[in-house]
Image (cartoon, rainbow, N blue to C red):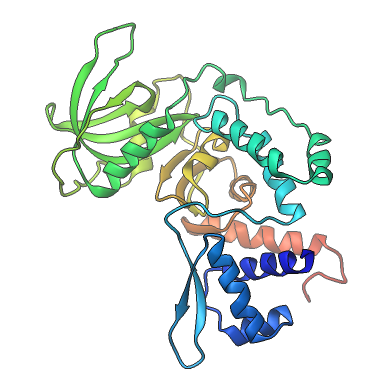
Amino acid sequence: MQKTSSRLLALLSLLQTHRDWSGEDLAGRLSITSRTVRRDIDRLRELGYLITTVKGPAGGYRLEAGAHMPPMLFDDGQAVALAVALQTAVAGTAVAEDATRALATLRQVMPPRLRHRIDLLRVTAVPPPAARDIPQVDTQVLEDLSRAIHACEELRFDYTPGGGTSADDPRRVQPHHLVTRRHRWYLVAWDLDREDWRTFGVDRIRPRTPTGPRFAPRALPGGDVPTFVISRFRGNDGTTTDWPCRGEVILHLPAADVAPFAQDGIVEELGSQHCRLVLGSWSWTGLASAIGRFDTDIDVIGPPQLATAFAELAARYARATGPETGPTP
């Protein structure tokens, strides 16, 4: 049984690389027969994984996104890493409570040997001082706003203004972007009644249903989201955003995972697994190092100096591995 479980886990890991696999290739990778591959594919389907058959000369298999969450299969290292990541979810963020519940669920289904390892790795994440008084944002509100943005649908919501005013202000807007700055979530939108661009604190938004008609997106002042947001906040909080080196990248991570660690950078949601980050630093090398700590794939948008800094850091790190493994001069 243990051998079968390990083989299923290895098979699922291959399918999760988001490519089409022929039965012959899978059999070769797992050192099993094509018949065993077919039988294991059926087992994964019974567990709830949506695996489709690819047509072609050799045939094959592809893992698709399903309609519900199938059972998760993790090896020991993945399970421990996931538990540590859940423990270090930053307090005060929109996902902190969900992370705590997810950790409790994960711990419940772990075998005793792994549960013991997790108990030895108790970690307490201390949020930055500036983030402790930041109001939490309802995850459902973020999802509702994101859905309207991607569908280009008008939004109606009640907005609680600052300054101690208690009366809600009804708004009707064309939503364009969800961004974060200094741990706070903002909605960038065209206010239909005021006929002007506005930036709304998401923690003060209470969406109404249903959403309005679809619209054609307008061009944002300044040409892009970071330029617009920076211009709106410059000087309001007594800080400067005029770094000598500022770069733009696409990170292969959700915006909610990047926002707590982006400092004064601008994070723009691009989808469930991608976000745009605009960050500044005193040097290009320092900027590349700061972006690299997110430990994910990075697409450099610009400027060229940032791409050059990444190349220089890569060469420097390669030399640091030693003469045996370093690049040939």
